[in-house]
Length: 312
Image 1 (cartoon, rainbow, N blue to C red):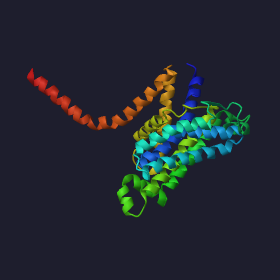
Image 2 (cartoon, rainbow, N blue to C red):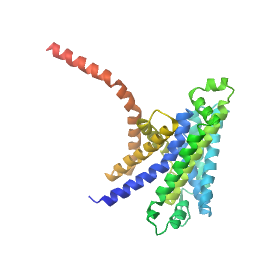
Image 3 (cartoon, rainbow, N blue to C red):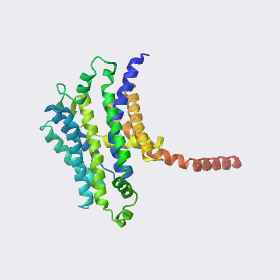
Image 4 (tube, helix red, strand yellow):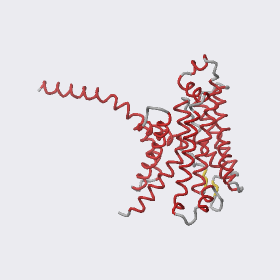
C-alpha cells in the first residue's frame, strides 16, 4: 500500500479538523459555557465564508478575516437580541436567523450561489509566497489553521477567567443566581453569542479561502459536525479546567475529520457522509448513557440466565 496518499489524506483531515475546530470552540462557548443551543451556526458559517470571499476578491485578504468576524458578531447579536429582548425561544431564534441568513448570503454573493476564488489572493496564497522554496511550503494550510486555533483557544482561556467571562459561565449554570447578583443575563448572553459567532464566521472564511471557492451550501450541516466534535472531545476530556476542556474540544474536531477521511478512503458515497455525522452524534450522546446502564443490563441478563437454568 502506498503510504503517500495516506499521509496526504491525514494532512487534509488535520487541516479541515483544525479549521472546523474554530466552529467547535464557538459551540463550546455558546453551548457548554452559556448553555444556549445556537442553531444559526450553519448560516453564520456561510456568512463568514461569503463576506470573507467578497472582501478578499476586492483585494484585501487580511481584512477579509476581520470583516468575516464582524459579520459573525452581527449575526450573533441579532440571534441574542431575539432571545433576550423579544421573548423568542433560543432554538426558534437560531432557526429564524439561519433561515434569514440564506437570503443574506445569496445577496452578499451578488445573487449567485457560487464564488470562484482561483485568481484571488488569500491569506494562504500570501503565506505560500512567503514560504516559497522552503520545506514548509506544503504545510501552509496547516500552519494558518493551527495559528488561528491557537489564538482563539488562548483568547478563550484568558477571556473565561475575566469577570465578564466568569459571568457568562455563571449565566449558563444558574441565570437566576446571576440575576440576583446584579448581573444582567441578557448582556452576558449577547456578548457570549457575539463572540462565539465571530469564531464560526472566521472558520467559514478560512475554509472558503483554503478551498478557493464558496458555495451557498458550504455551511450546511456544520452545527451537526460541531456538536459531534464537541461530544467526542468531551469523551476525551469532559472534566477539569477550561484549558484542558478546550484541548479536548480541538482533539474531538480532528478525530471527527479523521473519521470522515476514513469513510472517504473506503469510497463511501459523499451523500452518505451526513448520515455518518448523525450516527457519530448518536453514539457520542447515547454512549455514556448506555455505559452507565451497562451494570444494570448485566444484572438483568444474569438473572434471566439463572432463572432459565433453574427452570431446566
